Amino acid sequence: MSPRLDQVTPHIRPDLADVPAYVPGKNIPGALKLASNETTFGPLPSVATAIAEAAAGINRYPDNGAVELTGELAKHLDVAPENVQTGCGSVTLCQNLITIATRPGDEVLFAWRSFETYPLATWVAGANPVQVPLTDGRVHDLPAMADAITDRTRLIFVCNPNNPTGTVVDADALEAFLARVPSDVLVALDEAYIEYLRPSQAQRFDAIELTRRYPNLVVLRTFSKAYGLAGLRVGYAVADPAVTNALLKVHVPFSVNSLAQAAAIASLHAAPELLARTDAIATERQRVTGRLREAGYSVPPSQANFVWLDLGEDAIAFARDATEAGVIIRPFAGEGVRVTVTEAHENNTFLDFAEARAAR
Ligand code: PMP
Image (tube, rainbow, N blue to C red):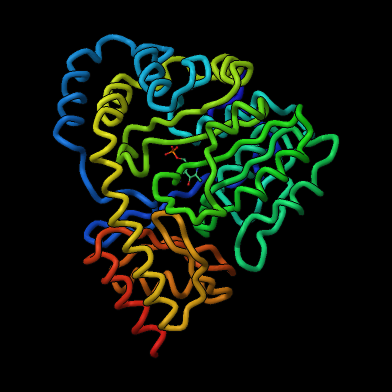
């Protein structure tokens, strides 16, 4: 007799039971959402038109290789098209790098705290995350990361600026680190927030130029943040063709949809206008950091479109109080909160709350 349907338990890899699902920033209607580092600006008219035109053809599959977008990116970055691989958000490229680099039991090394996808995708692949604490200043401890490399290390993520602390590494420290990484270990430099960077002399380097000297270096970037296309999911990797070819093999077919490809191309054409908006964010970031510090908060210097507040055990209560005040931010239990920096009037809503709470 066949079992009743409700008694059948499908086999699911038992180790997945211990892997938490990715939890994105909450969205409460009417509340101010400063939890996901999005831009508040809607698409430019030229980008909206490109999307509408592409929508007329969605009965067809998109270009699997995103050939036109890849060519535009190559021109924009002054590399060969073979050096570029697009993906459905750079988060997919993080997953795909783990897929091409690791087998179960191998190690993926990264700083902690950093982007949640690194450990989650590593667990899903059956590989082992190795987390190296940030320094007290919440910066990547690159010498300690180099010390943590073993003969099982296959991939290292360096998130610059780091999500969620906004901190960046110095050029010299990065070069010294890369020189210590064995040439067969991939290093992914995740530059999701690079357009917001206003580096000091010591923090200035050209990651794309570094990929020419380090064939094991992969630069990850996205259209989700400064380019304002978070809802369309498109990111890209820049690397040696050995890496981009491997990424192509593991990518989900047609994973960058036709609207995303068209919007990304139109956004590259409008790059000067879109990137000009990041100036206002950089100015606001300084103002927000200054006011928070004056109110007594510990805030590391951020080079991204968000700031980090070291709150320790108060993080969850702080975020709950912020939600009650109508502002959704991102708490990290026992550590702190991350707050997106946007336009002045929105930042002020958060600052007013944070100052009032500090004065309580
Ligand atoms: N890297 C970092 C550091 C991020 O913060 C994010 C988005 N939160 C991503 C990658 C992924 O961005 P997307 O998939 O939207 O391109």
